[in-house]
Image (cartoon, rainbow, N blue to C red):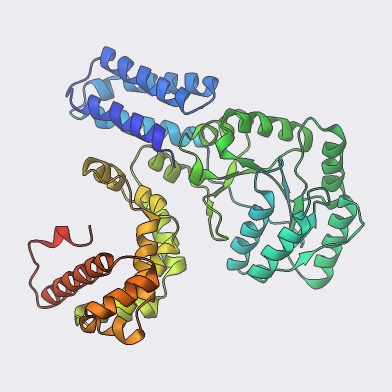
Length: 441
């Protein structure tokens, strides 16, 4: 996420840091590069112009030019102005009397149906009882898709064959009111903002259901087009919030940095993957931190708290202290970590990790490597996982065949695990080996 713009901005800040004391000319040269980086990231040119002007006004002041750490002061100013650009954190509103109605709108292919299920799951975790409403009779299998997602998450889906979308929505609200379900999440059909007939249908749904929230679901990868779509929908139906989807595939960041400033509509959620849990509450300070390559530890901790079982974690901690941690435990931990999301996202959340890996020549932690390790361990018997020391030549060949790998791959994993066990034993005994860095490279 934001790899392109992050790398360019970090390069600018690194060059500033080498200069020591800064002059006004140094600041102007750096901001010229910042301007180009933002434009190349497909940030709206008016937003870029205003942003750079605000940063320059503060960066050429006495506070920076006379500072003992001027480069750090510039980074601080850029961070603060970027947070201001992204707006404030905005949460979903609740209706004075239930049910709360949340209406999702947007173009076809923006990810509305998937987002509807993600929002429903998010709200259920908060103790609510959501009802999903299939109000898209136009896209083939749209209703079926929502029903499948609802079944997977054990969240009811309201449908009514042959009824118009406005009728389906208002009857779903009545159903929710009688059954005590709230919120009601309306998955409307994707449409172009220039299609008057379909936009009029949205206006009718809004008038009849009086939603508390009207959320535009927009594909972040469309860049400045996302901004234009947001402006158009806001004019026609009056938006209360934005959901940016496919953020995990957006290396530029133009939509995220432009859409709030241009449309005036707050961002409420970020879609970061296909998994039902891959929906993040929008925190402008955390997003700015990611864009500037400073990581996002708070979001990483929140994900971990949702995924990891505390009792199991304490049990594993005890095993590590007593050096009885085996391959079954390792597999369990690895599977838990993978639930946190793609490894590329996790690396970006740890301050400095992404840059450190690039400088060491390691481009990334590949998902395929983790899958290979998982396949190897799953091809072992439970007894072999608990006692890997019994795995000899013939067993290694069988495991390699079962996992679609080579005996050398199995041997490498076993050697690395043996070294890790030795390290745990040494640490448990109060001795820290000097050669720990080479483990699990």
